[in-house]
Amino acid sequence: MKTWNFGIIGAGLIADFHAKAIGDIPNAKLAGCCDKVAEKAEKLADKYGVRAFADYQQMLESDEIDIVTIATPSGFHAEPTIAAAEAGKHVICEKPLEITLERIDSMIAAHEKSGTYLGGIFPYRFNDMVVPIREAINSGRLGKITYAGIYVPWWRTDEYYKDSWHGTWKLDGGGALMNQSIHMVDMLCDLMPPIESVQAFTAALGHKIETEDTAAAAIRYSNGALGIIYGTTASYPGQFRRFEISGTKGTVINVENSITVWQFADEKPQDKEVLKKFGQISGGGGVSDPAAISYENHTRNFKAFLEALEAGEDFWIDGREARKAVEVILAIYKSAKEQRPVTLPL
Image (cartoon, rainbow, N blue to C red; front, side, top):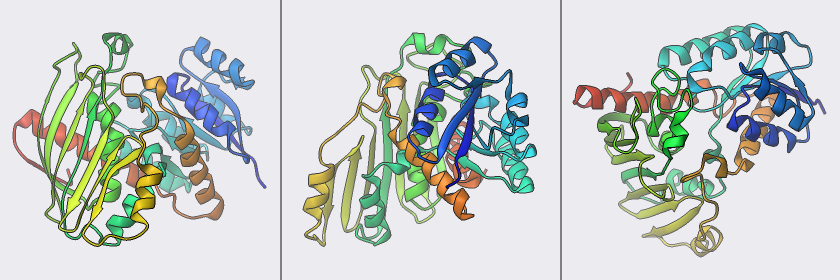
């Protein structure tokens, strides 16, 4: 079995998640890391006993590296991702893929040209409780779906926004939606038909930042269903994220890692097993502390990427799939700024 050597570009908080995830995969090995701040790269490298490269150009020139993960601030994803494609390296990139559609499209084009893989990181898709929800939707158990919405009532301190990039348009690309709520927006992109239009409001209500710390949007899907997207980092002390979907024959409510409502007109014996297995909430989910999120689903995300790569198959969350959540969020920002409904695609 081939061992895939990974390099991590960026040595901030999320890089540690990447390193742990790589370490849990039998045919993966962390070979190095880099960061614009040399001390951060050296600290991460020392922790995992790997090489600290001077910069990502040096890393991409190395035969030691097969795949790079992108763990830089969001607005710095495009340049190393494109450079990796030109160097023949595969890339798995943190959410959001980038902060504009133009930059995302340039990343996708670079990897399509080189024949290398570009994958996105959306760990929530790999949560066990999503499996029965997806099956219920695909099998029609909800009947005609009439509503699907997400709520992310999180909290971040003022200290969180005192670094050089969080809450800025240039590097974060947005606030509570683009950084925190994007996982749940992606859940809608994964489970529901495409979002057709949005009408939204955004504001900075609890923090002095450039971008929004609170956003609310009414949405319409291409199948006619309606929904809501609500995300904030100004809701002390932070509550669990929530996904609701209902139709003419059923309702499902997911809170954090649990399923709290699982009701259908056509009840089945296995329904009790679903509630028994997923009825208890587990994990804090980073409602107030970004470091509190488990890296377990990062491991699953990376493993699925490697499996697709080895099989020569399309990765489930390729660049085009990872693009979808960003497009929805940018439509919400556009609607809020222009104070009018916005139709997708942008």
